[in-house]
Amino acid sequence: MLRILSAFALWAACAASAQADVFAFQAGQNDFFAAPAETASPSATLTSLLAPSPVQGFDLTAGLNGGSADRNVAHTFAGLPAGILAATLEMRVRGGNNLLVNNDGVFLAFADATTPTLLDAIEFKRTFGPFAGGGTVFSDPDDGLAQSTTWSNTDTALLLLDLGALPLAGGGMLDLLPMLNAKGFLDVVVADETAADFFLLTVTTIPEPGSLALLLAGLGMLGLAARRRGA
Image 1 (cartoon, rainbow, N blue to C red):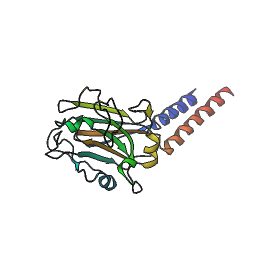
Image 2: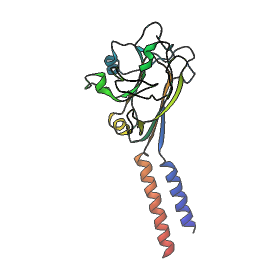
Image 3: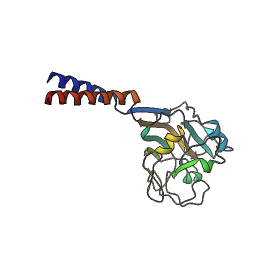
Image 4: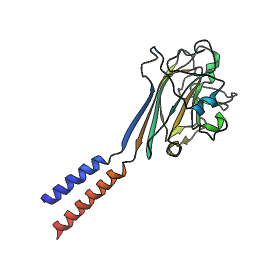
């Protein structure tokens, strides 16, 4: 009996060590647009694909963004861990005081050296408020992620997106996890008069190989102890 309890204790410890790992990557501060503005850090490739529209920092005034339209909050989450099983993206956004904000939205992309244009890099795109189509990036009708009848400087939304089940404007879901694992990074862009407070990317990964080996060893000892007891 003591052997079985010892083996079970080892198995339990190994199982605990083999739990999935969770990593959080934050860009900007969750301070509800408080000054000073924090810097967004897009990759060089993403920056070049966004040109000539400039990249702004987090927390800047929504609408015309300091007197200039068509700015973007863009950030690249680089160096993501391998073996991602789940991922969520949380963000707070605030609409602008210009009619151009009506077609604003978010897109998730993977811009690398082989990407010829911004549209080629985009894997997911949704507007924040309702949009009837007719734009360049957001060209299709969309009822909006924020589910607001308008999208203006009076609208602030805290969004939580499941990257394994992203809601598409035309219905259905998109699983972005295979791309995250293949690329090891994620580009997030809020375009292009809407302000962003922060982005928070949280990923859950499979256990390290060493933890899995310990778990299997613990299971083996538990089975061996049970066989000895039966003998």
